[in-house]
Length: 260
Image (cartoon, rainbow, N blue to C red):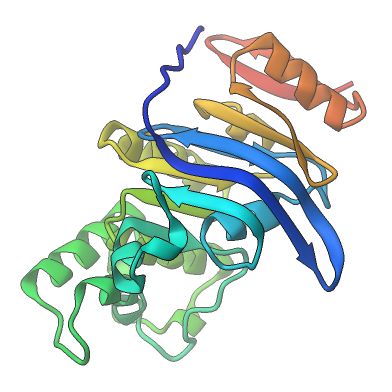
């Protein structure tokens, strides 16, 4: 069940990152390289700073230190260029209740379009592919506001995929998804990584996170451990940050988290 991690060029690299929100320090001196063409999942207890870290990697929060995207500091990227390379799916995002599913997914193509330009054939192909990948194609003419929470999440995921970015950041992407669609998401992430994409996700579902290539274990605004998801040291760190209320066990060729 071993999954070997190589050390390719970092797709993202946080160096000495510190973040304060409302004057309260939230992240403390984080140094975290995230290799390209891998899936890293950020895990930890509530209040550990997981979402704050992901927002900082996306360039959405002021911070000390430096975030590099594909070897270049984020400020050196022009906005449209960065938006084509790095795509973001936030937690509980709204997408325009009156917009059709098609139009919401098409928002993911904005970094590829000239100002006020009509969608190109390439845009339409990308949106169709994204909607089909998330099984949302049949609702393309419905409004976002008419969908259930799980259906809505799949449309927002399609918007992310439509960007066709090299690096995809997802904060709680499994929110409102039932188990079959969570399994579909897992297969989709594996396909993205096989295509050379880099995926970084924040997950509360520890069992799903253990499928990742790499786990970033956080506690109290710091990275407590970063390592392969099948490494015993990673499992020990994971159990420790949850006060040993969970235990990691093998199940077939995978690992599961069970309550003690």
